[in-house]
Picture: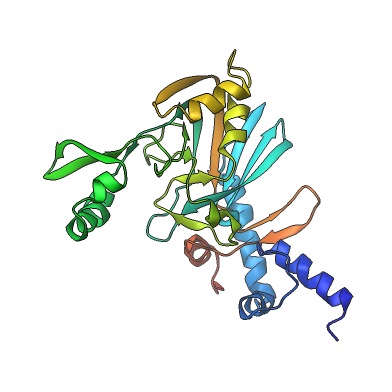
Length: 279
């Protein structure tokens, strides 16, 4: 019988596997319920191995993004300060795991469109609509390797939203705002070209600039809506870890599983086990 107790159990299962706790059983949920125990055990061992690859967590504030979870976690000396839903890279534009230090906030940023996007998306769009650049508040600033250099001006249509957060790395990955707010309502949030979109960039700006002198909430709001790019150096750079865990235990000792969205578990399984299991 699908009684209240069973509905409650289904909601808990959904939450532990990254779905909204609706209590409704779908085909996708049944597939998760039918994952064999051996597969889950191997998944746990793979993620325990990943823990060994990480550097020791620094003291003080730390920002961690777990890609398969589509979540950001801010902690201070191991204690949670807040969590935030994020959007990560879609398949083919995977967000990379690495460690860096956030050192700059850029308000009302330009978006310097990557050459790959210019070639694959901007030029075909211009072929269909000669006014595409003007309609999207974009401009050509030069030419490189036979391709136009395109940037999008600050404003409400800007793909980076009203602010971005930089932690220098060789992958050109950073945090940023987005005008596409509806994506944060979805369970699966792999939609970007690799950078990480924040559901609450205002909270992040206030958090990282709380020790930066006179950067009050009002001043941050003004800079985000100024329509003119402004760089602010963070007084004490914040360590950022971009991780890839498909299994973990939270602060309440609840075990969670997530889909292996980039297939990394399958690669590691073939190296760790004689009989690798896959979902």
